[in-house]
Length: 89
Image (tube, rainbow, N blue to C red):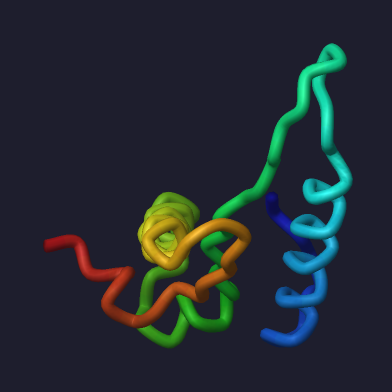
């Protein structure tokens, strides 16, 4: 998900918490019980510009790396991209 005018980490966490809450309400699909959750990798553009990476592919790559760290923590986690996530090597 891309969002504009998100000012800080707490606003991102609030959006992520809303997503986690909405997914938790899904309990069945075609009358079969399911458990739905998401691992969210978040990246603020201000973080990207701090390391000199303003192009969207670098931002998406950093968020993807953060998402995989969130997955490793278990269901329903949100992790922010770190400076190392913008490194290409």
